[in-house]
Amino acid sequence: MRSIRLLAPLDDHEIESLARVSHRSTYQMGEVIAASWTKRAELVGLVEGEGRLYRSRADGREKTLTTVSAGALVGLPFLAAGARPRGVLEAVRKRIIAWHIPARHFRALLRRNADLALAVVDELCRRLEEADADREASGSRDIPGHLAGALLRLAELRAGRLVVSETQAKLAARVGSSRDYVARVLGQFQEDGLIASRRGRAGLAILDVDGLKAIADPPPSAGEGRESP
Image (cartoon, rainbow, N blue to C red; front, side, top):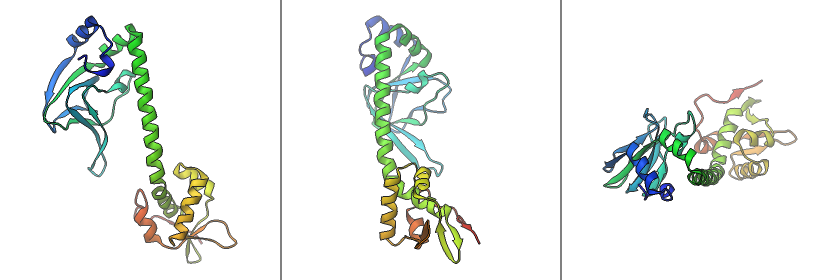
């Protein structure tokens, strides 16, 4: 158990006490180590092997959230009252050895050990920083798709043309980006012949519906768009 990084500073008595209330299991490749639907509130520490944390999407596909290797402690959200980690942790190597640690016993240990509590706070802060960086990076990649979808949803048929009357500032708020970045994306859409500015009038005209649908994220539902006189 001491090979789990967060537990390494514990003394022998603390390690032995935690081991008595925990259980050690071995898994083979593809076996589920822990899942979000389990009724047991527990943390999982890997002492050998590698695991994959994934989440199933509505369409049945699996999205890998992260991979974890020996020394990692998974399930820290269980330490918050009422919180529950999301996703499934499965073995991705031929042999995985893991400790299952009840969250209530780990919380009790945190109350007694200030150094461990600070180490957990540091670890959570590090993970939040990584998540923010990943979200920012993925968000920048997704903005064109979100923006294309928003344009299709907001489009109104006027005098035989599909137009979007919202300002760039409002579009930026809809897709969770800055006005400057949205302006650059719209400029690229214009260069690609997907949209055009409306001469002398506010808003945009949609020139290539199929082109926008091809990059929209999520793809628009059939019949999206509105008709106005």
